[in-house]
Image (cartoon, rainbow, N blue to C red; front, top):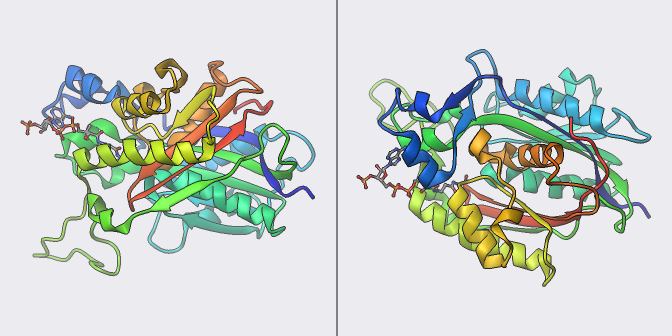
Length: 330
Ligand code: UT7
């Protein structure tokens, strides 16, 4: 029975404009030296005012479908969009994306797990395939995080950027390259106040005149930093079960976090893939964007054993493994 989920296509997209650290330093009180030494980030892409998350998702999703090889081509039975920054609170972003990609009346829904969203989306897509509900699933991580940042929050503006990445999953054999391994997923809602956007939901629906409710994204950076290192390490250990990965493709939160996770896993820092210097932390888009860059620059070649892991708001975390397949990122 072909019930494993196999990665058979990969596409990415970032909006063209890149905000460098030096330019950010003209907007808030910061410096290239501070940002590089505390985060490893050199620039991040920012969507223009007319671009929403679905626009980025359509670009990345279309590229992933193009990259998907073999029989099936552009056909998928489901579209999952992992995002923290949907176009609207209602409806979900995925149906808009499916329609714009011309995918017909397929199942389409969003997954909200903040920076762990793409991994939760992959696990959900793999579940649809294992249940026989879908044979091919497009899983997209897409964010316009710049939209929810406080213009005066220099720490958040230093880190976060916009972008999208997507994979096509198809039903296949668990032993073939590209087959997703066991997932470890977790959450701890007791830490829900560490990463928040407090308004826009049922607790604080509409900021009105005189309302002091905070409309912006907020993060307790230090507590999140510690949680990210601990949870990604534990989750990774569970899926690795003693194996050593050739390449770690972790959520691009902060270079110091990536190095701390690599050190705890006993993996050379050089085997922990980094593209946050070029794109920053793009939340749910982070892992597929990193996979795309790693595929293009030769860090990912067919046969390499890859560990994926992420941590984010919720709190949420997760990990999985795969053997890299023979695909061309688009
Ligand atoms: O994506 C998943 C979840 N997110 C993460 O995993 C991010 C985790 N956290 C982090 O990456 C780091 O905590 C930050 C990069 C957000 C902050 O770095 P930090 O080393 O934890 O700095 P801090 O918040 O403790 O601040 C240290 C100092 C403060 O100044 P004082 O109070 O010591 O005078 C901040 O005001 O650094 C200051 N600071 C800055 N200075 C220059 C904070 N941001 C900036 C900035 N430029 N951009």
